[in-house]
Length: 192
Ligand code: PRP
Image 1: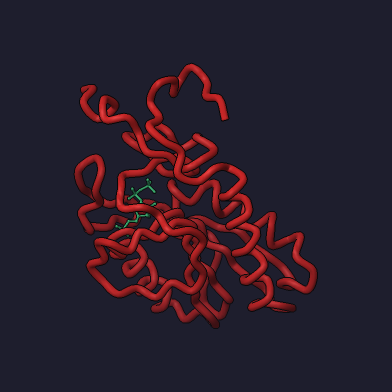
Image 2: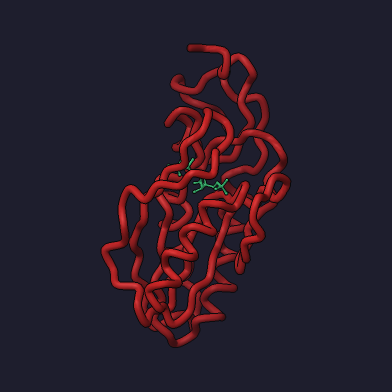
């Protein structure tokens, strides 16, 4: 895949192509749709990283026969303090859900789980509100540096133990709109 001028020369290697990501999302959609057949479903995307995965997942679930009876998409926004390439584990809730969680079938949708603290924080926060069911879906599982043992119900792809960008994942707010998952050239990190 060619790249536009904005990211020219920045990509060291592609890890998962846009097609591989789309196939993974279709697999996730099939599994989620089957588990919530005939029931209403609330998909909660965790911004900003999950902005693409939750929208693509919601549309893919809508195409699965015998899936949920209805699908509502809503968002939370969290941020973790830390340096540029690792999260610190201090989670801040920047935006809460608009939808009510109590009594609903909820799937938290994350782009990546790394140390696990963000998902642990959100799972505890939402569990307190009494959902009917609470599950988690992560597109890229990065299991090498877990600090907590979080339950992942739906996992898309294994992420290598590297700093990755694209398909929602950023470096200093850039690269989220890259359609594939990639590793950056080292020079990108040296530019102030
Ligand atoms: C990223 C990602 C997850 C979290 C996972 O978000 O989107 O929410 O880190 O990391 P953890 O498992 O180590 O807690 P980030 O805080 O970078 O914010 P962003 O989604 O706005 O990029």
